[in-house]
Image (cartoon, rainbow over all chains, first blue to last red; front, side, top):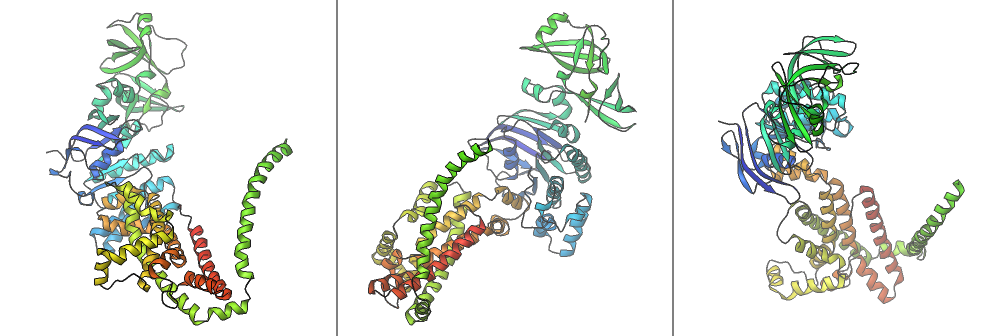
Length: 353
Length: 265
């Protein structure tokens, strides 16, 4: 039985709309919903939580049809991009607010709030008011407030995008720790692919109120079923292990070759590496006197023409990856199937995610 | 260059500022004359006269009652107009707003007709609510005059409150009523204060509606504006000026508090 099942959801609010949305999640799934602004992503969250009534379609949660249930009965938590902390409450009161509804004993509330605050490293802020907190702190308070009532499902609308890059990285790893510890099922809206790579196991791509693709993270990133998805997320994801740190570079061993990255990591750690297809250059002969650090010998498996660009599917031993090149490049280099080529990638384009 | 830029700005500033200051000064002069024309012994004597004490007392009592009623209605109406989409919303908005542009005398006349000789009036009469030429009528007249202002302020107050604050509360298990009291009302605190103060000032200062619906009878339905009017017509300037001063102080305090709350209107 699926945990969350959205069947043929339609909703039209004039300016924003959703059409034909089908999503199925299992308990503990982490779904990243990705898409440009105005794609209806927030509308999806607010339909699931019950603030909009769909024009058509049903939503099932843990085997129960919740389409007509009041939001306050659904036990779904939400974290907004601007956190929406209640300004007339202190941090403690914000976190305790949902708990007070079902837990009457003051001592139990205090214990739970303190435990949650400690886990999210905000226990020193409990007496403050939300307006005096930094963005990262507010984000953690909003997360604590949503998680403390142990929601069946947690929805997050771009929870990390208002943070500066350093805070965002820290918040992301804290989020991963908290969520995996609590086995909460999550739907997370983001426009930052790093969020999806770092946190999600499933991905849904939205555009203009429609879902372009939905599936396992690896599947969607490796096999985009249409051009929009390919452009939007198409990247090669490789699993590897950090072998060496040298002069600011990280050397990662993936199955069939080594990659040099500028991103920091620790030796011995298992990492996931992302390379976007437009960041790879293809040469027919081994390039000399070149600044790029990664030169990988590969075989052309397939050439797919798509208008003005071509997708080259390359394979280095057992590792497959794709490259975008201009159409005329294929002619100029006289590329054919089974040709041997060299893929050139700058270390800064090898991203540890 | 600095001087030329300054000169250009100065001319523009000067012309607009002089218009602004001209009107401000004129108003100040008009307001000031209310305070400087009468002798203070006169005012002190008038304020303790039985008529003035009666009028002041009735004004305050009816003002508090009608303001409380205005807020009781303006809160749900303002919230509904701000948050809900319903059939006929535009129509409702026009009708509830209309008394703002209505001359008070016409509003009073309309109320007199509906409370006087229709089934609505008969029904209200039968449960002991007679509004025609009574003190209850004073409060009713004040209520209908002030209500549209209060609704407007409350609507714009709720417009500025992020509905997501309320969504969050509901997602945490609170019903719409609980959310309204736990979240919407506390966040609307400034707007409620502003709306109450403006309503009170409107109630105290309502003249035309009160005159037509409740009548302007001496020591019966006599509130401050009626005192001013009655005494002007007898040529009793002292009493007229005194009630004018009291009304002025009330409205000045109201505007002062309203400006402090920084709410849109």
